[in-house]
Image 1 (tube, rainbow, N blue to C red):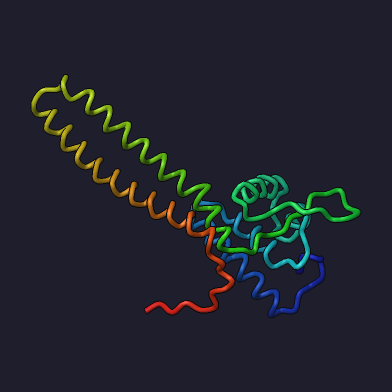
Image 2: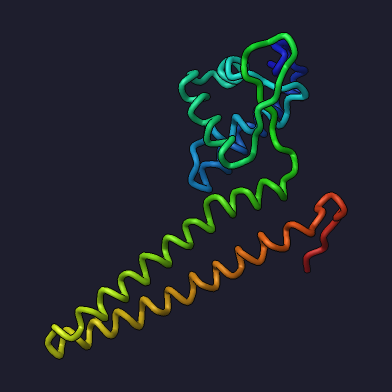
Amino acid sequence: MSSTGRPLHPSLQAVNDSMLEGLGQLADYFGYNRVIGKMYGALLLSPEPMSLDDLVEHLSVSKASVSMNMRMLENLGVVREVWVRGDRRKFYEAESDFWKILTNVLGARELRDVNQALDVLEGNIQHLREAIPNMDQADQALANYYVGRIDQMKDFFRFAKLILTSILERSRSINVSDIKRIDIE
């Protein structure tokens, strides 16, 4: 069934179902629930904005689930609320700039998670360094070993932060629509 409620041609329905399932699986892979991916897919494939009620009917999920997941999609910057003349309900459409989606998600979640990991690692190193003087020799040796290993991990997360920050900074000057084909060898 289309977002307008009319039955789709069988080929269109098959592609629609495949896309929604695929985007649901992709969302699941990245740690979100499948409904988020399916909601984004339904909005992406809909030529017209959809209301929460439209999504409930189209995806056969509860209104509470659609409402909660819509807030998440809005916070990630992958959908936006739009005004529809003559209707008081909230309507939404998908962001179709995939580079913008990538940078929104990287900035909103991945960079935040890397920063949190760095904070935890630094806190653990600081805790050990303060405790080492009060340890016996064997525990000091083990604590120093821990500090070395945690430092290695911290270096990795610093590198990840550098990469993410570089991608986010460079994304401002990249117009992905200008790129028609990328050959990877």
